[in-house]
Length: 78
Image (tube, rainbow, N blue to C red):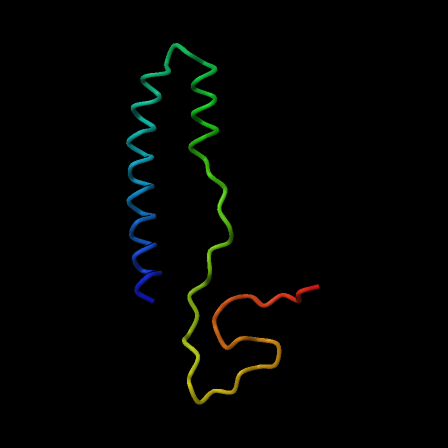
């Protein structure tokens, strides 16, 4: 739980830095259309799906077959 919270905090810091870099690079590349397009492409990083906030699993709650008892999507291996 602590690692997830720390990762969320670091992610927010990175997004703030990219926002500042965006302003700087837009100014820097204002006369260089190719570089501006390259920056636009580089600043948009594709991420995976974000987990939904779910209620914690109770230690007394039975685990459903085919799951690990942890939050997240379970997919078959094959």
